[in-house]
Amino acid sequence: MQALEIIFWVALGIIFYSYLGYGILLFIIIKIRRALGLGKPFTGNGDYEPEVTLFVAAFNEKDYLDQKVNNSRSLNYPSEKVTQLWVTDGSDDGTPDILKRYKDVKVLHEPARKGKIAAMNRGMKQVTTPIVIFSDGNTSLGKDSIKEIVKLFRDPKVGCVSGEKRIYGKDADSAAAAGEGMYWKYESQLKKWDAELYSVVGAAGELFAIRTELWQEVEKDTLLDDFMISLRVAMKGQTIQYNPEAYAIENASANVKEELKRKIRISAGGIQSVVRLAPLLNVFKYGTLSFQYISHRVLRWTLTPLLLLLLLPINFILALNEGMFSLGSYPMLFMGQLLFYGAALLGWFLEHRHIRLKALFIPYYFFIMNLSVFLGFARYLKGNQSVNWERAQRGGTATEVVA
Image: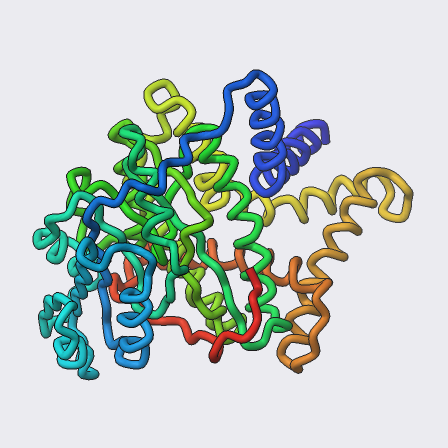
């Protein structure tokens, strides 16, 4: 029993650290650094205005073209310093022809669909500006996003800057919208602290930028292109910084089923990334970056979901040994686990009947997140996760801010 108790408490400690403990530790470290006068990271200067390329790798985005192109034109940045580059990979809905109507848009089209990263590898050969900003075709950018991103590049140590992903939802009371929104609020705060400590651990594909000179082609079967591109920049000794004033707006997933589909792909890509970025696990070589990477990403994609699965049966055995109906710590913790998963199940039941109870969205969304890791790992092992995106359906026109 003693061995089981050790396993239980170690597992519980790792789970807590993965989701809350790391954030608490970051907060304490940041407070201590500020008290010692080490200050905040470089915040840049607004008068720094290098030429930039707005890079969009697109597949069948005709429904968003007018909105995206016009949004890019309206950004608060000298238009003569902005090149809009669209790389359409296999689009057969008229996207390339529509884009060619815009005289200020450069279009690179190939009929064959080879995946987003193949399009990015191809398009980057045409980029001549010192900064390239990647964005998705179905997102809108905040008016000052370019200005807010590029000013951080004035620091020569910065190789990549990530913007903030903001979730809008027509139905802000849905589990998908509220759960995704709450998750990204927490992630946004962690990114702020990560950046202040040293470096963000991966950029959001909806909006991020790199120094063009630091680009290196990524394997064509890469699933998380934004994560791999940004982390490989960081592995060169540059940092990834974060500016929430530069933001991309995206509608929430239409429902939890669609959100699960998206997260399964991300989880499969996460496992792939951990394998390909194995050298980054070496804390003796990469120091603080490795610590942040393991704490913020690796544990969530590997060990923690497995420990969650093991924790319940181990807790059950320990609770039986202590007396299931006693007031001991193990029975109480076991009942707590049952209540949490029961709340997740109830959240699923009510969501499918369009009954909204926000108190249940956190356990429901947490369960979906970890379920996606197992399903994503299975896909990775089978090798049947296509490099081509199967786009998750998004909610309707945004009417309320969720994150």
